[in-house]
Picture (cartoon, rainbow, N blue to C red):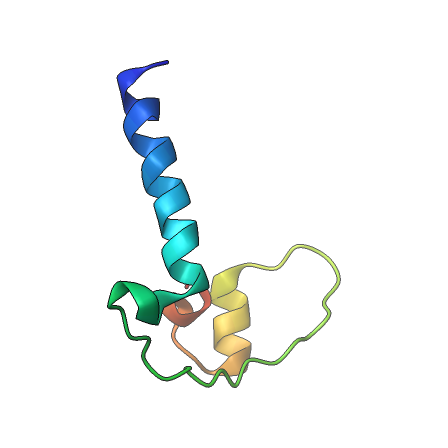
Length: 64
């Protein structure tokens, strides 16, 4: 097994275990962030620049 994989696999599984019960491992989670996202169905290819202009928001917001 490659050296990178030997380090990656145990780290990945440890992350899964900790995420299942973070308080048991000394982690505290912050409050959930509210998301005011909305879904809009569109047809055809549209640039993010065009969509940002129509929505009157900064193009960088759409790139998140």
